[in-house]
Structure formats: C-alpha cells, structure tokens
Amino acid sequence: MASASRPAASETGDPLLLTPGPLTTSKSVKQAMVHDWGSRDAAFIAINRAVLEGLPRIIHGEGEFVTVPMQGSGTFAVEAMLTSFVPRSGKALVLVNGAYGLRAKKILDVAGRANVVHETAEDTPPDLAEIEAILTRDAAITHVFAVHCETTSGIRNPVEAIAALVKRLGRRLLIDAMSAFGALPLDSREVAFDAVAASSNKCIQGVPGLGFVLARKDALAETKGAATTLTLDLFDQHAALEKTGQYRFTPPIHVIVAFHQALEEFWAEGGVAGRGERYAENARILIDGMAALGFETLLPKARQAPIIVTFRMPEDARFVFQRFYDALKDRGYVIYPGKLTVADSFRIGCIGDLHARHMQAFVGVVGEVLDEMGVGLKSAA
Image (tube, rainbow, N blue to C red; front, side):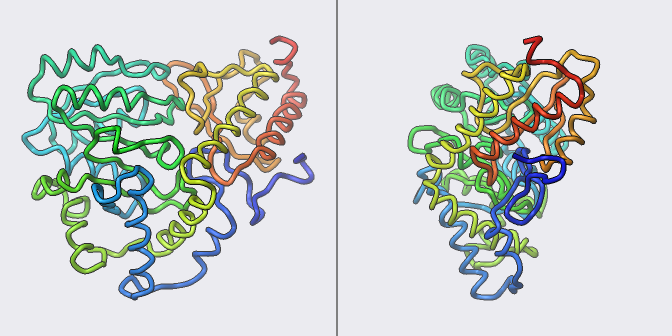
C-alpha cells in the first residue's frame, strides 16, 4: 500500500492518474514516442494507415465506416463532426445532461447551425418520450447529437435506444463517445449512426493530441462543402489521406505512433470486452470501497458507467477538498474536482493502465487520509 514515504507510482515512476483522460499509460506506450519520424516517411505512413484502418473494427464497422483523424484534443473531433455533418440548412437536436452536451451546443451556435436542446439533470438520462415529441413537432431537425458517457457525472446514456428512435423518425445520429469508445460496446451493425467521435487519450490508453471520427462512408460523402472551417473539414481531410496517404497539415506524429502501440495493447487485452471488464472491476472496487468509508455516489448503479465516478462532497466541516486532493497526490494519486452545477462533488476515474490492485490500494489510502483529517464518515454512515 502507498504511504507518504513511498507513494504509489506508474511503471515510469509517475503519480497514478485516476482521471478520465489524460490518464496513466503503459511504459511501452511512452517508449514508442522516443524516436523521430518524418511525416512523409513511408514507415510513418504505414503506421498511420494501420491505426486508421483498424479503428472501425472496434464498432464492427469494417467496410462501412472510415476513420477521419483530426489533429488536436477530442473537442476538435467533435467540432469537426458537428460542423461537417450538420449542413448549413440543417438543424440539430442536442441532448444535454452535462458539460459536453452544452459544449456541443456552443459549437453549433458559433458555427451558425440551427439547434434546439433537450436538457435533463446531470444525473438523469435523456427522456425518450420528450425526444420523440420534439422530433415529431419539428420537421426541420435533421440530426440528433448524444453523448455516450457524460464525464461530468459518469452517467451512461442510452445511445442504443436513442439511435432506434432517431432512425424510426428518419433523422441522423451523431455520437460523442469520447469517454466510452473502446470500453462500452457500440455495434454499428445494430446501432444506427452517421458518425462517432473519440480521441487517443481515453479508453484506448494513448496520449493526448489526436481526435478522430468514425464516419459512415455514404454519410461522409454527403458532407462535401458543408464544413465551416478549413482545418476541421472532415471530407477534405479524408480526401487528402485517401489520395496521398498524408495529412493536409502537420500531424502529431509521436502521438500517432504511441496510439498505434496502445491499440496493439488494447487488442491483446481482448478489445472492448476485455478492457470494459477490467474497468468495470476497477469501478466496483472503488464504489464498494468508498461506500464502506461513508462516501455517497451521485448515480445509482443502473446509470453508472465504469469510466469515472462522481462522489458527493461529505457534509463535514473537517473535510476540505483541497487538503484531501493534496494528501492523495502526495501519496501518488491524482483525482478530479467535481463538475456538477447542482451539488458539490469530486470525481475518480477508473480507466487507464490501472488494475484491481491499484484501486484497492487507493481506497486504503483514502481511509488513511480521512483519519488524518479527522473525518469520521464510516462511523457516521
């Protein structure tokens, strides 16, 4: 178990990131970045091609979907998806139950795309009946945007049911799967959507710097001329890669090579099933252990994704979050502050190169820190 004199550490001696990304990566992923490649070199082009051709396999979309990479954070990919797929004459219904739905609305507003919002509380999934009512009364809506796992709270939104409804009513679905891709199943053979956005530094366990959109080929073809910016034009980016094998603008080469290594490790672990199972076990240990210490989760079990868990801030004057955070960091664990608008909270991630032993040790350290702070949640609980 970690202690103040011997803090927990990753394979490379860094603090463990119990966050939803950037996250703790394997030593081999880090080592992949210690070399240099030319962006037009055949070796790099082959690595990049392997990455792009392999990603549709994760959604069982081989042959139907293509990967369009986008330099930058995951939000770059989401903005590229929204501003490429929602045409200038279109209108989007944005499903909001956290910060990332609100960010999508802001993207559409800045781009001048008409939109309407269906918002529920941060601990509540979208209301399917209300979605149906909105789509039924507003024929101008062409697209629906949904977040698979909203990391504001850690809630798992019902994208399968949303997709079925959107398809039945003749609209197109766009999914932000940033925190879910590679850990929560998303089968394009059973779930209808035009595009899904994700990034290198989440459940595939690469490093930040590359977003990507998996786009249905026929839907991507329809986006020609729709984008509002040159750099975020998915159609143009894909066309250039298809024609030359190269990016229009300098790619994050080291990030892509590390991502290639991370994908090898992802498949070796068993793909979505294997990685999702490990994360689920991490989340179970975390939630059960923190409950035993007296902490309360925001979400009920049925709504909780095994990505990041939101805990309510204890109602104890002796519990000072900054002191709690600093004490955990001193012991080798980095967590996230809360992002809720309705309650004080903090968040703990279950993803990255973390395993059951790490989560068990973390819970033990939380108990030590509470004792030091004089916070007696366990007896109160």
